Length: 555
Image (cartoon, rainbow, N blue to C red; front, top):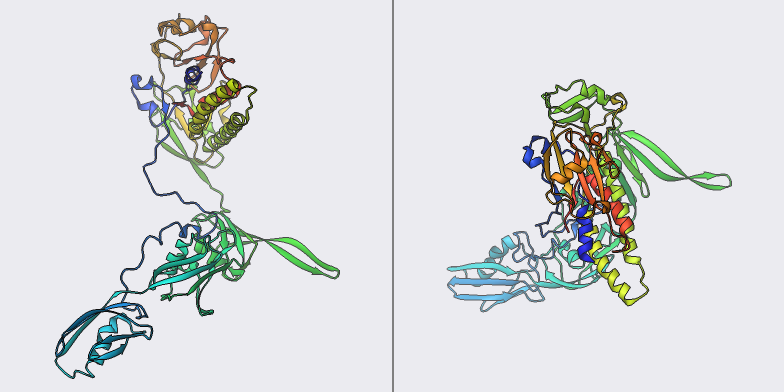
């Protein structure tokens, strides 16, 4: 069964379209090679992080891995810190001493010295002054902070994994929140975070200030402190010409539009902002809810205040006066043309300096929006096929085993097919009116090179390229390739023309008029309907991939 399926899949060869940057500059030998699609393997071990909430990318393990092993000069000494004290001269003493619960360190023959709340950079001076009250002269001291105390801190509120976590007192709250799995992005707040001690609020923290300006208050945590993440008080949705699209949390359910757009970064082409927000109008008999829509120039939003629930759309209201068209293939013109908005394909063709090798009758047009649409259609077809595979039922154990084998192979093929990128070719059929083809920004026009070759692919003994002769028909060219691998009645014969269109010639194999220089013959195996039950759906998708993407999938 698998062998037959492999034969079936491999039989549906690619319908070649011209890849302007490669095929038109390759040698005749290279042009005759098939393009095999192999999905790229990622070498990166870092996760790709996407988010629909501004700031959600903050907590993905970047803080929890490292704790503070040293402290800065402004660190204030606290209970439980370890100090290294060395004395020499009139007294010889060296020891590691922990700051006791009263905030003191005890030195023999000197007594307790208060160090609680002393800045790290002043520690040596404070200890030496206390020692000199006992030893007036000839005493030197060196005091350094070895490590801050370990603390256990409660994480409460809208974190993903509330609990008690251990760290250093000098650790940032970012590390503790990261240890707790980050903030719940459905209802948690990045702007309403409190550090509590003895049920009193010690600090209020807005993480958007850290994200936007790098501001983070210095907080020394103690055993039993609580980091409390409150609920979001309001959000807005942002879309359009901005660096970040998604939900943005407001500080107190309202915020300056100017500050919001500064955070999400407008794109250079943005000119206007449209605000869509719910409003309530009070009437004599009650209230009425409506949607209010307002638009502002992006350089005149200083006094605009946004409330929760609004939708912010940033757009460009400028219309392009011209577009750029990529021009590839066999010609002596520039590789990029700038033409007025609304120009037709005929306007571009009139500017091309063709060569004697240019195939002017087979002009090709590629359009990004067509490729996106082809991708959507392909994904929809693959999803439907995947559902058919996963929901198919069997009446017997033998049939179930057969389906399981088929399903495994087909699902692997579907995963590869999902990675296919369609080329977005617009087929210009014979007799088309170039004046009616209005070009768009990003279009790519390709001028193929004339080729006096016939390429034969598929179920033949020797897939190859053969010099064209006008007295040969389709059947003759197939014979020149070593003949077919099975009965010709069990095959589908297609011809692809240089412009990318194709025709079915199964009933006209001896008609010499059907074949022309530059054509490609595809000899495709007909699916065996008895071999597996999803032949029709799979066949349709294979044709869809061949036409839209010009690739052949490797199993």
